[in-house]
Image 1 (cartoon, rainbow, N blue to C red):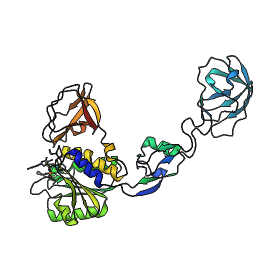
Image 2: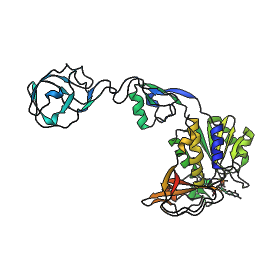
Image 3: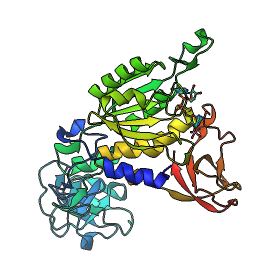
Image 4: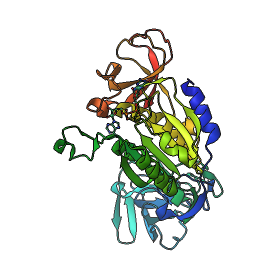
Length: 394
Ligand SMILES: Nc1nc2c(c(=O)[nH]1)N[C@H]1C(S)=C(S)[C@@H](COP(=O)(O)OP(=O)(O)OC[C@H]3O[C@@H](n4cnc5c(N)ncnc54)[C@H](O)[C@@H]3O)O[C@H]1N2
Ligand code: MOO
């Protein structure tokens, strides 16, 4: 059996990004940039006021002085006239600072009269002026290739004055859940031998959060001919097929077998991890196939550890960038590690991380309380409360 690191290296070596396309900015949220984005303009474009008030010369800014109002400056309005000695311009937030002015006194410290303004109160040392290009200059690199256009990056993209962006294609993903016992949520109560099909809903949500588009969903029983047909249909529609269940060694574990007539080539199968040992990755008809164990906790842990990096690489990112372990303190002692590398489901507490009480691979009830996966090496020694351990956001 290969180790977790070996499996990650095989994934990174085998998988390459999908194609790229140009999208209008309004369509690009959530995509990954396939180009560097440079600023077309400086920001701010010129010296602008950061407050509503009066622009004047610092030399004229004594308390009780009265200045002649010679114009006004609005954001997006005409450029104001210059300010000379003894003069001021009415100014608003974001508006151009007139030539000659080097301070804006906020209006709360002034009293305006007809054609004039008097500085009534002492003001602080701030000039209330944002300098031209103080944020970025024209030509500056604002967003690198590989950056996901999350809500914050969307602001930066628009500020670069870009109407469109080159982005990686969204991976089209098919999700197949297998098992004769599975029934659609809401219907299991009607069949004494059925259980709700839960896993694919978590997997589909994770795919959506990481930039994939679900193009097909199916639930298959445990009959091989029907599963072979389902595999063919999914391969025809998607860049990636995620199949849950049937990954182990049971008589009706057909997840790999159903892709065999479609030319399945395995990248790896079986990894020395707990939970999730039966996870496998392959390629068939030029499409990726990721097999996850059916046990709900195992499926979600292996999705976080393999599906998320796989989606990242398909979208031009480094898969290991999504495996960003942080050292965090334990809130309790941990027993020694076993013969498989273990990913312990943990919650944050004021004392540090504490494991969920039930670490069984089949857990569904407490799964929503799991916030972190703590990595425990094969045969790791016991860990004490207060020690730091590598943790990954689950
Ligand atoms: N003799 C051995 N038995 C097992 C081994 C082994 O090495 N030797 N490995 C175990 C491990 S580890 C795991 S993990 C499981 C995974 O097996 P499968 O991927 O074949 O999963 P299934 O048998 O199909 O299902 C396991 C369990 O999960 C439930 N399930 C499956 N799919 C769903 C779903 N979509 N929604 C909700 N629940 C689901 C299923 O009913 C089973 O209870 O194998 C061990 N066995
Ligand atoms: O590896 Mo399985 O996921 O332990 O139960």
